[in-house]
Length: 221
Image 1 (cartoon, rainbow, N blue to C red):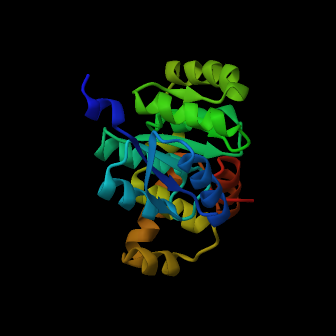
Image 2 (cartoon, one colour):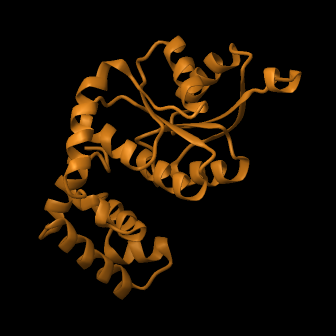
């Protein structure tokens, strides 16, 4: 192993919609000489664009960002860029949510109340191609994840990218015309997507859709 290998840093980007949290993470990472911070993003779409542009070794991604949730970012990054490892940061220790992130291709799942030393360890672990889950949720995650792998795909996994975007917009209270304007689609096309996603999820009206989105943590309650 040559000198360049020894000095090679882990290139990390930070994706979280709270500026104060990003600053706190940056302060922790700057104290570690092995890490080089190469960018930051404040929402899910910015995160995907940033990761595709700078190709970090590890992307720290908040699960509750606007535009795209963390597991959607993980899935899109994994499908388009096998190099970057996505490490989810969250307040939630729900095993179903952890399993969804791992299914989406995330390399790790870290609770936001974890000690700085544990976050640094997690970054090092996933940068070397391994997976990491906070010890606090590991036991329940393993059990739930195995059960899901043995069963059929969750209904949410059957939705297309466009259907998932429309689901979130509708759950947030936007009218079909507003969704169409945001996505640059016709009202007829958005309505067709709405009908398909409702059918796939077994939902019958907007109130059920909103409850589903809150239960699955696609939007905030």
